Structure formats: structure tokens, C-alpha cells
Image 1 (cartoon, one colour):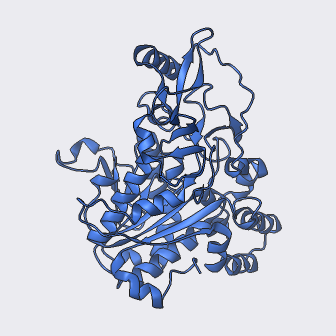
Image 2 (cartoon, rainbow, N blue to C red):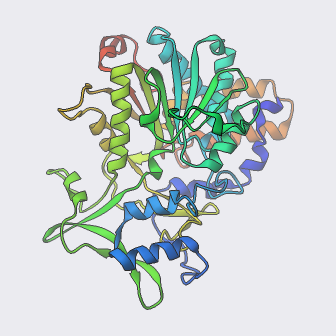
Length: 430
């Protein structure tokens, strides 16, 4: 029974304050240490602004999160109680187990094609993939011809993922072929190959089960405001008086305004061209090579406006204060993702994907049987504290006031599966 607890007791100490991350509340925390001269990344951003002028929020996010020397994700473990936020797979294995069952069911629906790969974009600590692979092994999936492909830009997190997923750590990265598209490889605890890639475009061309959990919320966004003269972009500038960062409006239209739809009624927008490109690469692979995509994130259907925020130590944090020390995020616009997945450009050789969702996390997990899974675990649990922890984890994942309604699920399928899906709709979505 210990294998199902995964030290839930320690994780749940974080409490409900963790879930403020998903509340959509954009109220800034107290702006402390604004003049911190020791912040290396802040100095780089200051120098860039002084040299070239104000930068976009998208450029700022990219620099803060993935700067090679001082980026937030690049050199530390930011997950869990000791980090800045906690994710669903870290709360309970029930989450990953049900995702795995869904993937196996849909792979079977496609005729069990081999070879195939399961791809996770932004795998975090590797916890979700670990749970998925364990369930795959129970269904004898390890005997199938499949591999694990992880898209991860952080060298530090890739090491944590390797410790979680693999038998031994591979220290011979330099021995990979020069023309290799991946930068690291090893074998999972169950024998399947595990490879790490910098970008989705580097992945092998084969049938793919795509999994993106809390990935799109960290991709850069542009913030736009509609004024009397039209759309203007929110930029980040340097306050020369005290060397702090501040928001300003562009004087003219910027290229980001090209992404605004003509019928847009909102006056404030957050758009993510990188998210659109990423989902279109996924959709094109699904059409051309075969596959299925499952996107899980906190977000909306094109109705929210100002959601850009920072998180540090499980609390809201001013995004412009001490860059590199806090997570930066924005709610995912699922309506934009669905539009991108169903509108290939005329020069591209792929057809619109079929999309299902979004549905709330509570509905997806309930339809997939999380209540029955909880009952089974409780029936074999003789530890009262562990039983209470399992109940608390279930509540956190499904309660609408916590994660249950904040997170959304979106599925992508190739157009050729339309008739099959009419007869056998995706589980969890209806």
C-alpha cells in the first residue's frame, strides 16, 4: 500500500494555498526587494532594455523562464512542497493512472499500431510519466514496440526525470551520434527506450500519443489592450529612477496585433503565437503519422483577459519583481488552441484535427472512474492516516473549488477517425 501513498502526507501539508495558483486571481503580492542589485537576470534584462528599448511580455517570459544561465526552470527543482507549486500527478497516483488507462484505451481503438511513442511535453519531475509507464507495464505494454520521448529544455529537470524513470543514469551523452536529434537517452524501469529532445519538431516520425500537462501555461504570451487608436501592446520598460521594471503601452500597432480576430469583443487580450505553432505541429504529426493528443491545463474558452501572474513559495508574486526566482504563467486560451488545430495553413500538408473538449478535470476523472479507484484503494488500506490522505487527494483533484473546475482537458484526433469516434466517443469527454 505504501507504493500508492507516494508520501502524500508530506505533499498535502502545502494545503489549499497551493491552489491559489489556479484561481485566476491576478492581484500582485507585496513588491519587495525591487532594487535587488544582486539579481543576475534582472541586470541582463536592464541592459537589454537600455540597448534596444522596452520588450514584450513574451520576450520577458522566455528570458525569465528559460535563460540558459539564470532561467527559472533551468537549474533547480521548482515542483512540490519545497518548490513554488504542486501539480496533479504530485498529489496522487490516481491522476496518472487514469490518464494511462485513457491512453491505452484510445491506442487500442486505433488498432494498437506499432511501433509507437508516448511523448510528454514539459515532463516536470517525470512523476506523471512514471505513473503512466507503471500502468502500461501492468497491461503488458512493455512488450509492445514503443518508446518514450520527452520534450524538455532544462538540463537540470532532465536529470531529475532520468532518476525518476530510468534504471541508471546515462553519463555517456557525448557518445550519441552527431546527427542525433535527441540529446540524451536511457532505458526506463520497464525496458522501453527513453529519449530527450529540445523541441517537438525533433521527435521521430511515428504513431504518437501526445501528452501535455501544465505545459502551455508556461509558453510566452503577448498582452494587448484596445485603445481609441486600435490595439496596442503592453511592454516592459525600465524605470530609470529606481531601476525597477514597469509596464508601458506601445505607441503603435505591433506584429502581435495580427493575431487579434476581427470579431474580438474583449478589450484586453493575452495571445500566445508559440502555443499556436506548437499545437499545429502536434496536429500535423497526428494527421500525417497517426496519433492522439491530450492537453491538460488551467485555462478558459476565450473569455478571460488579464491572467498573467507569478508564483513563489505557493503564493502570488509580482511578475516584475526578482525575475528568475518565481514561476510566470498565464491561463491557456483553449479556444485559440482548438482554432489552430483545426485551421492548417494552405501551404501545409495536413488536415484539421478532430477536437473534443474542453471538459473540467472533475468530470473527466469522475467519468474515468476515480471514485471507484479511491474505493478500491481504501478497501485495501489499513492505515487510517493514509486513508484520510487518499480522501484529501481525491478531493483536491475533483472539488470544483480547488482543481476540479480550474483544469480543463482537450483531446485531438486525426480526421480519419471521425466515424469511429461517432460510434465510440472518447471516454471522459461525454
